[in-house]
Every structure is written in C-alpha cells, then in structure tokens.
Length: 136
Image 1 (tube, rainbow, N blue to C red):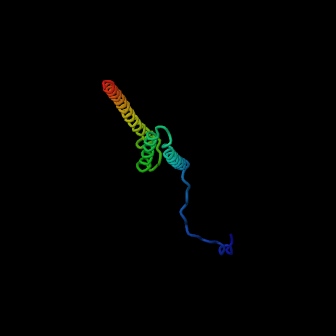
Image 2 (cartoon, one colour):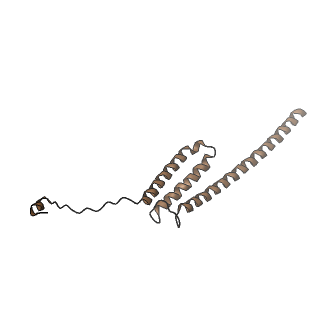
Image 3 (tube, rainbow, N blue to C red):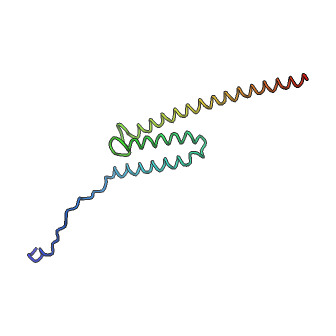
C-alpha cells in the first residue's frame, strides 16, 4: 500500500454485529408457532365433532399451559425439562381433561337415571289413567 492509496480508504462507523438466532431457538419458535396454529385449528372445528365440548376444553387447557410456559421461566416457548416444561404442561392438561371427562360421565349418568324415573312415572300415570277410563 502506498501513500497515494490512503486517499481511497474509507472509514465507516462501527455497527453491532447481527447474529442469527441459534438453530435450537429457531426450532423452539417454529414448534411454538405450529402448536398455536394447531390449537386454533382444532378449536375451530371441535364444535362439529362428537364430544366437541370435551375436545375444546382439552385444547384450551393445552393452549393455556403453553402460553403460561412461554410467559414465564426461561424465556423459551417450550422447555425440555424442569419447571414449566412441555411435559408438565401436557400432564396438567391431561389431568384437567380427565376431570372434565369424569364430570361429563357423572352428568350423563344422572340424565339416564332421570330419564328412567320419568319413563316409569309416565307408565304408572298412563296405567292409572286407563284403569280410571275403564271403570267409567
């Protein structure tokens, strides 16, 4: 480099280096986005499915668990282990789903009992009515 080449040098301001997110972070974000889209899709069609209320409740539980996981703790949307991990979220969601299923079964049992009692009472009424009509 000669003295005449110095005039051609340009000095620019230093800029912070933009480093792309790590592959693990990009994967976590992609999984979180995909999970959110899946949850929205299932919620939108759950009403048309048999037992759609149970499906909707289960999906909402998973969605809430995922949003709680992404809001707290390590700052990542999905963890691999420890507090706030996806396994813990799924376990709590499964527990909530099982409670809802048990409640639905209890309500269904009560409905069947009510229907049975109602049918017996109607049969007794109809029998008494026909006896009274035959006496006349």
